[in-house]
Length: 389
Image 1 (spheres, rainbow, N blue to C red):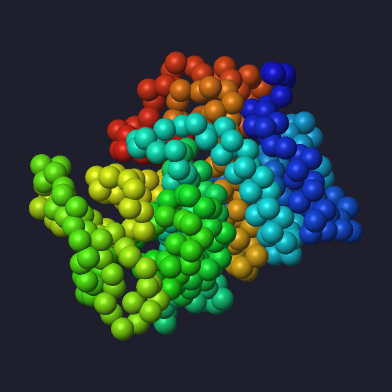
Image 2 (cartoon, rainbow, N blue to C red):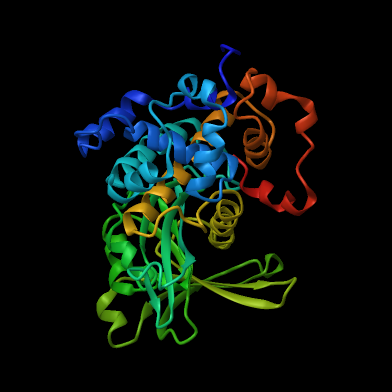
């Protein structure tokens, strides 16, 4: 790799520009654009994500402080906050959403053989959402509460590598369960969800599509036990039952059998009830599958701490979606770099290094492989190693 390039340029070399240009042409992003193209917009916001820029003025000042390097970093034309603000406001966010899917496909291919703690041949997804608070007076479209605004980022996470395979960004008042209508089910895959997704008509559609789900049962669930299987209570299991729903509406919405597994967490003394439509895996695997759902919570915590998705560079829905999708693209791009360069350090360490070396003209592999950085992660982030890629 040419060490005369800046670190930032070498990071962008991992971007498939041909695919990016296809996304731009699909939505005519550069139609009648002379200078500040979609590529320049992507570079600017990716730079902002990697270096933790606080505002458009911050981005402008930082980039224009090294004008002699901008051309070699891929920038064309002047970088001004007004031009960037207009681009965020008007350029179709779907350009960056489609490109993120290109990177996601590439990352999933790299991580498809990774282990996630369970010996299953099936693909396992965790489905959940996170709420990003907004000021309702600045973001009036982001309805959430009477005096509060927010957007939700609904995410389907592939637990092999913790790669988000589906993301929907909606106003905060959109209920989580509605996202089940938008998913394209993958036959044979497991979908792990919390109680917020318990809607029996939608769950029955998943069953008809030959998709397995694992979710938490609600306390007021009415059911009839058909028979029970023996369980080893030393593992914490308390029952493994085959049931049919008895509620007036629920038995019409889900007329088929369900499996109900009850488990006692011996450390906390708390009981958990799981519902699934899979009758072949062992009951302890059902509990472990739901336990693995915690990885999506760590994923949300990680991106909120290390990516710029809580303070926005624009107030329109288009600007917010554009920023979130480019932030996700940066996350996936760093994951790709980690795998392709066979790096041992964590994503946290990679982002910290990239944040202070974007203008350095060194080999990116040498910088990221230096043993000095291998043990540089602070103690408070050790738990995030659970989701390292």
